[in-house]
Length: 415
Image 1 (cartoon, rainbow, N blue to C red):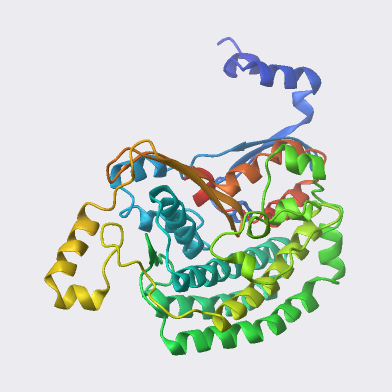
Image 2 (image 1 turned 45 degrees about the vertical axis):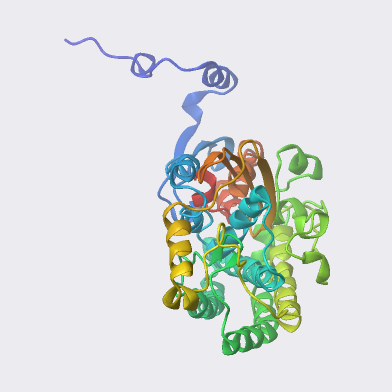
């Protein structure tokens, strides 16, 4: 008769953290559940290893990296200009906002200043990206908890924005609209007219969302008092964006460190009081209203002038000139094939208030058209770091609500 194997013999040797955990709890009374990496409420390829006592979470271990593509090394290999399309793949729910943050960082590294009209168009694009992201975040959050109608309504408006973006740059999803020194092209007059009409009507659509959710008994019960993050913990874990502001910290880079002329626009920064899922929801809803307000101001005050610099050593010449002039054609060829160069030893860190939080770009020049080092600070990665502390003590169904309220995207968490 073969010798019977014990459970201990079948388990590989554990590390110190696992051994310490096993000493505190009786493993036989708990269940380990793999939530993800392919799960509808993990919003991407995120694995959370949950240890459950019944339906209560007693330990949570996020396991990231399933979507890692080596973006930083790709940037160092492709160069400043050719890397622009890759920025679409970070927060792919608001790709046009990533474009603007990246090129602004490279311009600061090279000492380049985009024209005023290009800066205003960038503000418009940042805020379109914010609305896009929050619409999908709200719709998916509500659907995770069981409210399907709001998901369909938010996508109604999101599709209108996709149509506008397609008219602006020729693509709905992978925009690549930004350029070092400005933006790719000037929007047509009817585009600005239609965007203005959307932003004028959009607050009424937000009112419809709130009629469905804000005082809905089920929605309130599932979110109020759930996933509470204290002000101290939010700061200690480096959280940013609506999650930080939902915990009562009044911090928005558009106000604290204005860029692209944000100091010229009037808008409010919504702040939560309790730091729970419900406050994070309210913050995003109000942020959409404020984004529409900023876009309307930018359209009204849009200055005349070029949308890209005429310094052909760093910027692509205007298309009409490329088609008719030899010098412009040569400059375009050089910028596209080789790209602009940054001074050796120069370094710059730029951060912007992207939809998910602070997106930071740290770039170091080495005198060539490739950065010596490019580092990406993704807000979703930092925001997910608090999950091991936050999830224990909640019920399994609450984990779904908490993840929905975080509105993360794994494209910028893994990079």
